[in-house]
Image (cartoon, rainbow, N blue to C red; front, top):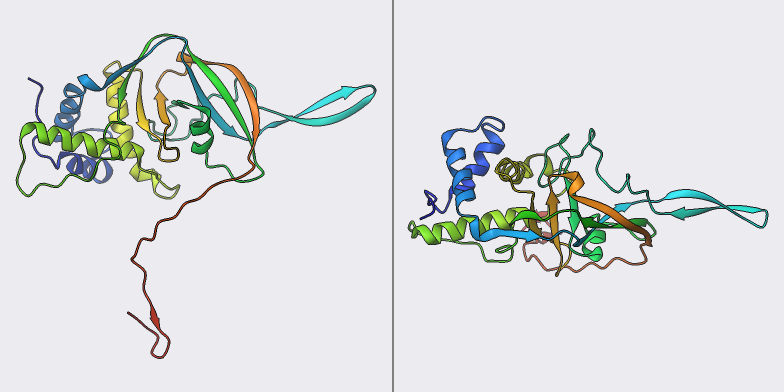
Length: 259
């Protein structure tokens, strides 16, 4: 029987420890959490077969000088295949990697790939299709991304604890993170991804928060997917939808006080 989590709140304790206590040398409690997450992940392993296509987008294009019938002009073309992969020695941090250690982020379809770079109207996007070069094993962190927040007043059964912890981890991988937050908020998922990398997994899968049907893949080996073709996509429109958070306030004009 797989090892059980000590509490349904283990993920919160793990987050606090790696964000605010010790990030690079893990105590016994953090290691116990990571090992339990790994031993309970067996039904989360997904195999992506060699030959499958995934997608990656980058904001921008390059100027290319064309010539015809004695006339020359500059045209926009997509980035070259090398530019469509992360820089090996100057990698930015992401949801599954710390700064300096590259990870290949791709999506299950081109629409998701384009949405993930958060483009604005008028920008050009270089969008590449990449072919998976070998069968790869990924751990799936998308299963409980849209589940409600688990809440227990008493410590639940081991099975319920496992389900609750995995829901929280799934949601952490899919949670949108702003640029000013990510330096700390990415740490828990980075630590988890690196632990699974050490265990021999090829990457992780998680749900895109920017596309209803798409999934993101973070691949640890940059060579496990190679660019097959690339095209330019100008951004024509961007759609936003808003919810009323119902937590506003009114100002009393006479006294200048907030209600």
